[in-house]
Amino acid sequence: MHHASDILLTLFIIFIAAQIGAEIAQRLKLPGVVGEIAAGCVVGPSLLGWLTPAQILPGTPVDVLAEIGVVLLLFAVGLETRLDDLKKVGKSAFLVGVLGVIIPFAAGTLWAHGEGFEWVKSLFVAAAFVATSAGITARVLQELGVLQRTESRVILGAAVIDDILAMLLLGIVSSLQGGGSLNLQSLLLTLASTIGFVAIIGWGGTRVMRRQSGWLEAPISPHSALTLMLALCLGLAWLSTRFGLAAIIGAFLAGMIASETPQRDELEHQTLPLLSFITPFFFVVTGAKINLAELASASALWMLAVVTLIAIASKLAGGFLGALSLGKRSAAIVGFGMVPRGEVGVVIASLGLAAGVFSEQIYAIIVAMSLLTAMVTPPVLAWLLRNPRDDNGNNQALRPHRLLARERPGQTSRTHK
Image 1 (cartoon, rainbow, N blue to C red):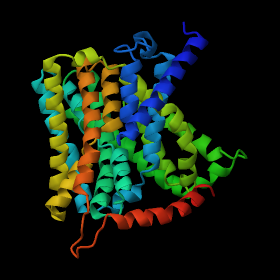
Image 2: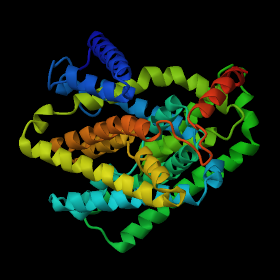
Image 3: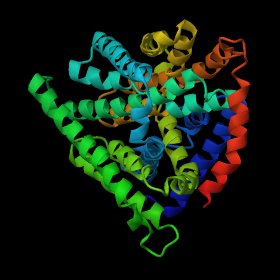
Image 4: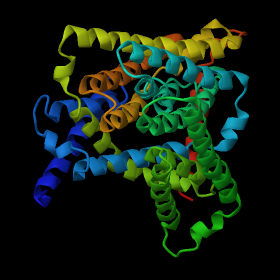
């Protein structure tokens, strides 16, 4: 039985730890998510023990709140993703997105199978190598003032494709876990049902919402658009589980549908306080579930080094080859821009641990790999983009920053309309 006072104290500890960890990370020029997960390691059973294993077991109030947090996080990711974005990206972005999924997935599968996993479980392990954290890269590009560069547009366009393919791939490997063996018929059936669900909800839902978004303003509540879209988010999250997919896929599709409404800017503005409050619980709990003792041996550290090297090299190869038509330096920028796994790899690792696919050691290694890739990207991108010049010798790094600064007031006013 969970006493209300004990739960409130636990939530207080988690939330304060998340804020302190994120603040320290950001002062060190690292993504806030790195600090939140590190804070979970500190307050969790491995170090201070302020969070006990019993408090973060699946089904406990804290774990349920963390799951709601990740559902809302993927809803917010979908809210920034529009179908038109997929149509506007060019050949390079498409190649980067596809190769950036195929190469890491193949490399991760071979590594996992070489470590003794069955082929079906190897696919799930490999899924953690696939998805790029577009949020981390976008933030780095914005801070460097290079969002308008060709490489930046390719990275962000490819990240949209990458996210879609990663979500589809996650749905496939998740539904295969209970099948025992991998066969072509099962794979094709799973692929068809996954594509069908994504197509009907994603493509059909967005087209309907473009034409019929007026009903969001029908209720007299000033927050009717937000409440109705959150209801859609929870509903599709549940529906995706009925198709054997992860709940986050339904939440992501709900966000994509919401991105087609005239209220998109308003929804983004209104969801920020929710995300600020609830998503840190997921990352702190994720960090608390890491058993640091599993990384204390030389063999575990060696495995972590190998996994991180595979993760970086495979994404870099996919991005570099896909963007090679832009030139070698630009291809390298795109490649490193696709490297960070961040929260996406953590989400998949958490799902794998809950499903019994990962041992605690593999879980700890994959989460640590996600953190390391997120930490490597900012300084490397900053170095590659330092004083970049175009063919005429003009500095390209400062121009987008000034444009961005001029556009912000207009963006803010539209958000509050």
